[in-house]
Length: 579
Image 1: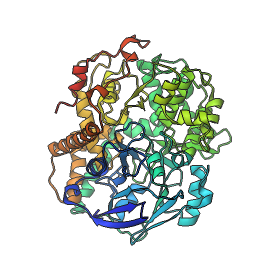
Image 2: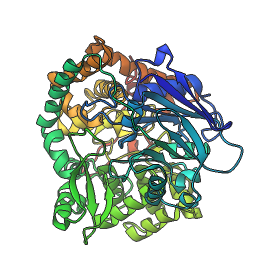
Image 3: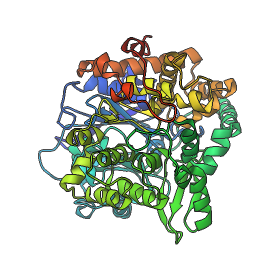
Image 4: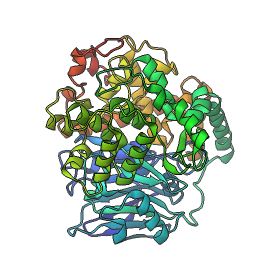
């Protein structure tokens, strides 16, 4: 990958640029965060002209490396006010890499009120007006069909839904998967940033692009074989995720008592089996039709944790039906019917909002009396209203922090104004340290301590005790920042955490591709540097250690069934980033 594409939406002109030396061995999150820190005024308004949005494939994207098709999207977040990297599957990352594009940087904003499509192929970048029929409340599913017809169904695509057009704080960026269904860079409101640039879609055509160059193909193939074997031999990445999807975690976390329910007032629910991965898998198999238990969100995925969920007639409803979404609606909001949750998930994908943020906002609204507890029909109607947002739809799409303020609640589960995901930090203390300290706002993917606290993968640390958690969260955040820079899926952790050969194979693939001799220490250094850059941006944006805290109610409201509280001191929390 040897070029940047810089798109100026003020002048509506684009140009190719050589990659500066300082960025040549950066990819994915490492690249997006460095560009944002170097080029974006930290105190700028996230929806103003001085913010930028960056799309970057990882170091291994576009190759045959297993599970290397992830894309990083970076900007200053309109939800948190800090730096943000959001990660997605789909075809876009691999197509960028095959075209030799290391990053797309979009800056400025038009003076008119039109929306535009940025069209990229191997020779040119063209900015043209978006089709009118894809705007003004048109959902993402229909917009993909319209844009496929215009640009070809093999083109990669990033697009915003109506929520992004209206610049709602929970708006995501949707990406086409291989079957023209939807994946998303969900968290942090980056769809609102793209909407502020008046970009409806980015379309990429990698026809005649050729292959990503590999310095030592034989060594690369051998390392790829070892890496794939490590993933497939682990019981989680090789079996459980393919059979039950990420929703396999429902019964596991519920049994552990860390399943935050009814706006984080309980850690366990009685209807967990209604919404579990086992029930999800059995339902898909029973209905057949267009349903599919195991599916890849991007080419080259050997884990295949995604799936297609169909209705009673076997008609496709949604794909990538994730644990976090099912938890947020099924446990936190108390909706007991899996079909109802699937319909809401589809509607959120269609209007283009983060399904974690909006699900937790719905639960908070239920606690505040705006919606009856467990009312799936009311929740679905509000999400659909986000296409042409009513006042209530704007409130919910504004995110959990806004809903909590408007409802006069003190129990508002956010860090840096981003909703806490599907693991309560009181009985799973390692993930609580990640939520508190990551520069991204509450984000389980920033350092997945659930693995060692609950799953006992990579570590065996008592989730109810403080011992070992600081060091573990630190190590997980460093490692995750590095993996996010490779273009690898987060779930490759299961193939490298307890398997030295798997970890070395990942490093060997990078070395074989670029003709390098990196060591494990170099990979750790990469992760540390990424985190330092992100913390530096947030500091300049006005953040301090005082923002690295969990909601106060968790310090004095014990969570049943373990009846534990969050008991780390500020001084202990601040030790996480002592490196």
